Length: 400
Image (cartoon, rainbow, N blue to C red; front, side, top):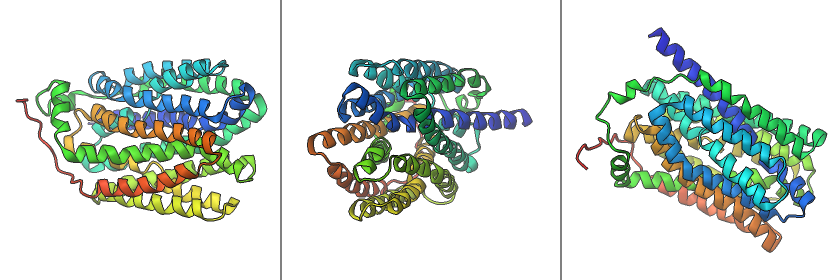
């Protein structure tokens, strides 16, 4: 029993470190948009499109990487994905054409993120923790990703000012390479989930899950989350510059988002263990609509930007432990990485649209106004999608 608890604790600590580094670097990509676009004479759409491809590849691969993690464990998954992530950053440091940027920042880093982010690591934590503490444990691990964002954003800005964008990417590649030996700490006992129920073909599991409306409602709501966080994460520094705020304002905003998201994800995990998670998700999306509307329609200042960062930080990734927890409540933990990966695919479709449309809208109209307004409308839609979802355990049929 002590060994099991010890391994579970190591897994949660190791997963937290992986998330902090992986997502901390990923959230800093928006800082590379201005210097790379300026040096190579690209419009904002070029960089935004590469990041959009990254998010799309991440999402498309996530169900398959999740299925791999369900079968072979999180240790092997992180080991392989970290190699791809580090290689992508290394090649991005020398990318001088749009196609090279898409290959490195898009394809390779997208693959790397699919095995070093929430769907795989939170699922592993969820499998290792008893049901009554699962939501809280996921919240703690999610908060680590936010801590990485808070630390890496100002750190990355300092490196950019000191070393330039290319050398900064090399430093980021070295940090991600640390995840390769760290993966050895991620011990996971898959035998406990393999004896709960008869093993089913993955296609059978997916067909049965696809027959539940609540699964699709949850997935479509998560698409909105992806749209908003990537649009804001990539374009808020440039947006604030266009509003005549100092260059450091965008970095400070994203760092504040990361800092306050630590509290937000922890509280979401705690609340998810006590109240209905879909209703909490609906409330979060409605609050996002209010916060975005106030920020966009009120005069922009440093005060309003930082107030927006604090409010959005509390709501930023609070959706993640609640969404993954809802999947576990409905379908159990045996296929959790794969099913979380399917839901996350929708998140990444939204991420692709948010990242790309932000750059496209600006290049075509000279303004981000259309995408801000769309974000408000989508928040309300996501809230309405989550309201009817009910957390009830679905038993898989062996006859499909």
